[in-house]
Amino acid sequence: MLSIVWLLAPDLLFVMWRVEHTASAALVGRRGAALFLALSTILPAVRHEPPSPCRRAISVGVSVGCLVLALLGAYELAARRAGAWILSAAALEIAVAFGFMAAERRTASDAT
Image 1: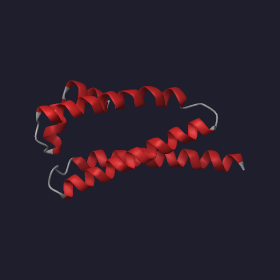
Image 2: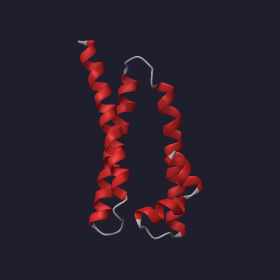
Image 3: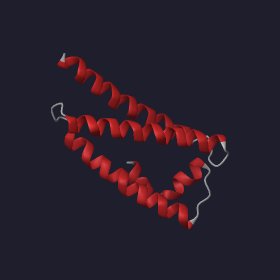
Image 4: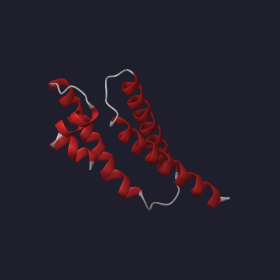
């Protein structure tokens, strides 16, 4: 869903996050939207795959990426380059990261 918002209504996110809407910011947002769209296509496709090194790599990669995004959001808020609504995105990113970590942990404990 976030990818669709970035593609079709990036102004909404700029306003919510209190980020200046520039052509450069919109360009980066649209390119990021393509990556979010790719992830939202890949992840459901591998959701029910059995445990494997590839599935673990996907889980670790998504977790790391989401945690970095959350940290960047907090940093931009602290630097006053983004508004408080950026924390809603950070909270979602943390939830996704911990969800993937919990799933991998459950898989590891089921294997032993």
